[in-house]
Structures are given as C-alpha cells and as structure tokens.
Amino acid sequence: MEPRELLESIRKALQPLNEAILNHPMIKDAEDGRLPMNMIRAFAMNQWYIVNYDLRSLAIALGRARNVTELEFMKMLLDGDYNALHELMKLMRELGIEVKDPLMLEVIPEAVQYTHYLAWLANYATIQEFALAIIVNMPVWGQNVVRLGNALRSKYGIREVGFFEAFKGPFTELENKALEVIRGIDEQSVVRARNMAYTIQNYEKAFWDAVYNVR
Image 1 (cartoon, rainbow, N blue to C red):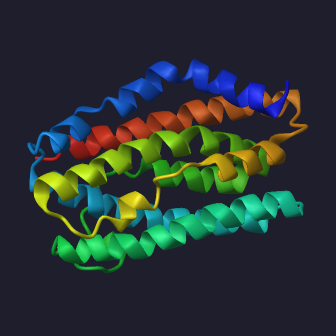
Image 2 (cartoon, rainbow, N blue to C red):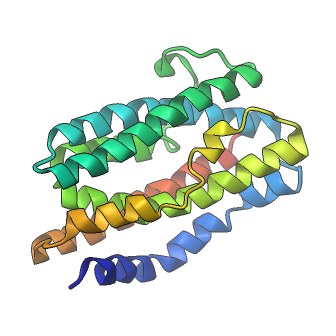
Image 3 (cartoon, rainbow, N blue to C red):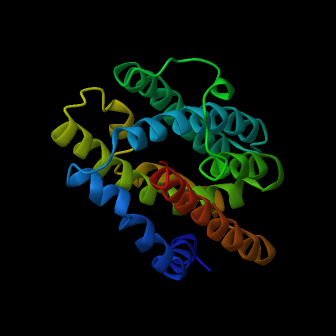
C-alpha cells in the first residue's frame, strides 16, 4: 500500500472518533464565551505538563532515527514543540499560573495520558510507526487548539495566544516528510501503526474530556 493511501485509510477508519474530538463541547463553549476560567487554566496547566514531557520523548525518538529522513521528521516535531513550550509560558503568565516544575502543578491524570503514551511510542515504536500515529493526530489537535485560541482572544480578551497559533498548520510539509518516512513500511508495522493511531486519538479525546470535566 502506498504511504498516502495508508494514511487516508487510517484517517477514514478513525473519522467518527476524530469528529467527536473536533466537535467537542469544550470548544463550542469557548466560542460562545461560556467556558469557565478554571477550565482555561486547567488546559494551560495540563498542557504545561504534556509539552514538557513530549519534548523529552521526541528527543528520545530523534535519537533512534536510522537515516536522514527520519532525523529530519523528528527534528521538525521537536522544533515545533520547543516553540510551543515558550509560547505556553507566556499564556501561563497572563493567566496567573506560575511557570515551574510541571509536577508541582495540579494535573489531571486522565488529561495527561497522551504524553505518557507518546513516551511509550518514543521507546517502543519504530520511527515509521511513530510518524504515522503522529501525523494522524496532529491535524486534529491543531484544528481544535486554533479554534480555542481564537475564542480565548475574541471572547475572553486573552492576548498571549501564540501557543495555539503554533499548531495552526498547514501540516503539508510535516505530512509529506512523514510519508517519506513510512515508505516501505512492512505489513506487521502497518497493523501496529493502525492500533497506535487509534490509541493516541483516544488519549487525545481523553484530554479534552478530562479538562472539560474540571469543577
């Protein structure tokens, strides 16, 4: 199966789950100006935990790259998250959240499952499998956070929305590089990668669900 065909087949299989993420009530409430500030703060605090450890996981995965193509793909991801981390610090300061050791903040276990799974992928998936799972996840995550960032600026007057804009896309270059990485993937890895993509998208939805349930 050609890389593009494989990617689209996985996206099609995950469409109901992705639609549930993209139509999450947390985003709609933010756009209506009805999202409580404690949920906005919870979003930032849990992302501080996630991005901090995602960066470390991406560095591990980069160290496992076997060729220049895999190295370039992982470096793109690492650079993106590094930039997002610094933008997130600005948002946290505006929200009155101290920038400190993520474990010193109140994180929600159900919200941070994603980063724990990314650490697993970094250590136990091949870079081909890793790339396929990430490129399925990234556009869905990106679309949601862009909408949330727009809502926080327009409805809440929040100025530091660079974190959300860091994931704006388009993801064409990243996706094309991922397709280069997964070319020649074997059948066993295809099955594994499908399951990884399904798992990471469920953890994506769990993040939004958990933050939205903050009281």
